[in-house]
Length: 197
Image (cartoon, rainbow, N blue to C red; front, side):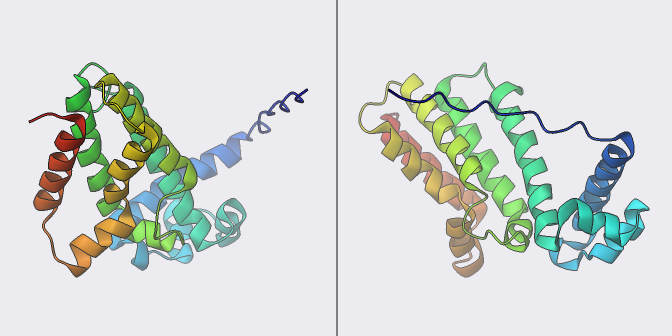
């Protein structure tokens, strides 16, 4: 007999000033990364831009890696919302093949855009297990919608892998392959897997 899973409890409500500081810090951090790149952003500059003390920055994020991770999580949450409920073809409403191709392009461009952040967050291989799980489950869902047969878990993992930063870095940075060629290769791979010509 299995035991019931423990119920997850909601985190304690955030004080208004803490919520205001969090929002100010996230907006300031995003602006600084946009202006100077992840490598050029310091905790001092963030505190100054957000109008808070440096101690507030460290209490909120713990470290520079924690801050970069928070920025990635924020971006990931927005991107996942677009996949699940945004306009087509990335969001619902487009045929599954169009959604799958839009998904691949969007994921590739997002990972390339955030390459420095991913590295600064201490996770150069992948974003996170949760993000990788979301992408794989979504691709598996679209493959099933397309009527693809076979081991969908494996096929979805094989399609997601080329979109991850560790592979993209090798192709873009070391091999100097243009993103258009990478996307064309991924599209060709998808069409072969789904049997579309």
